[in-house]
Length: 160
Image (cartoon, rainbow, N blue to C red; front, side, top):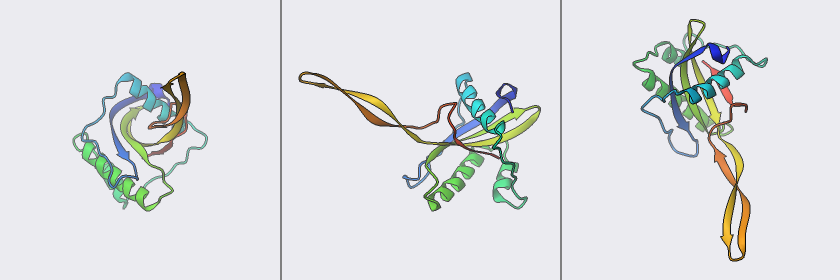
């Protein structure tokens, strides 16, 4: 799917930091302004157009599939919360799964509606720090925990 062919319809972000005892769930959809839309569309395009894409599907008996199938504009926020809580429980029972923000998105492309779940792993980077000392400045590097990967960076993703 090419980003120019996508129309974003709804989105919400939940915080799934396994160092906390519970997820931080949003009660409101996000404002899908043009910069954010471009960011999200670029990630969707990146993984849907990748040679590494893996096609999968939920079984008809899957509780996750039932949630997705029953998702409507009226229950989008509540459905997203249920999916986030389920993923958070899986993450907490598997310590190898890193903490992340998740973006649950509904978009259309070529006349079809899709739901995407982007798991945006936190990443560590560095920034500078300046301290004023008696005889001048002292510059140093400090760890900066960025929440979202840049558009060109790989993220964990699953298209639902």
